[in-house]
Length: 170
Length: 188
Image (cartoon, rainbow over all chains, first blue to last red; front, side, top):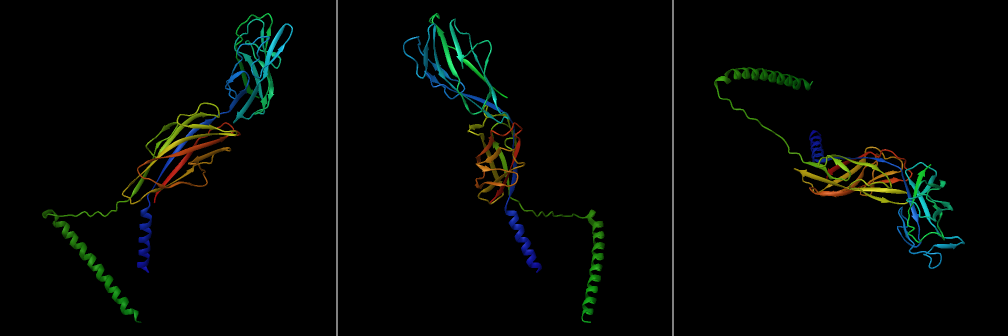
């Protein structure tokens, strides 16, 4: 019996000695922050970047009469005329406890005399923003009407400008 | 009655042993007394077994790591979000309802005095992740409750690349994401 126990101990010892072990740790540190994104869809004229937060639209040469850029509507009136189109704006959130957002818009620079930029029929300015909505629904497309109104008296000029959209979580 | 002679013999044996111990002690005392005048030779016998061992080290990882080349590495990702900057050495994948950060982790296991063809690597978290956050190594879910086997055929002496991944759901509130992955390696 004693010999058997010794043999058993010897076998167990041999078994445990055959496997070597080691340990290590990898620690990651980081802080999660909220994020808010704006995606603009504007498939009008010769656009690029549609679906991202930076979209460029090329209208080419426009006039009261003549060719109209793709997906742009021209409205001719007595003393002025305008071109316009719907643009899509989607605001998305991540890691943010917020039920709605406020969206504002502002021009980057002043417009030439006789030319007015509008969103939803509200004139845009480079001096202060206008509020498009204060109860925007996340992940749903907001479709404001963008227009450029050109008086008959406006001299031929570049109408290039940029609209800055700012979304703020409520 | 038959036991008595045996007991008597045992008693005689103990007495004889006690006598021999006393005798030996006396001899040692005399022996000690004569050492100064004689050359004495001593032998030191060492009995030991060379035990096999393996060593795990982390060689590389994204972020801003410290302790590379050792078994204890800490790396900082800084501030992370779905749309902000991506930590150095990490890749971000944006999906509809979450974003995923991944980084390769170089793990090397070496062996010494060991007859073993390969090793088994397991991993676990020291604490479960926050709600809406998943930690994975080689696409195997990590938790503090169970150990995940990453490989059972690891190659010694080679830095093997594993992918550490953190999935963060859009519904997860801003917070610290700090966690520690414990890696264990056993020779096969």
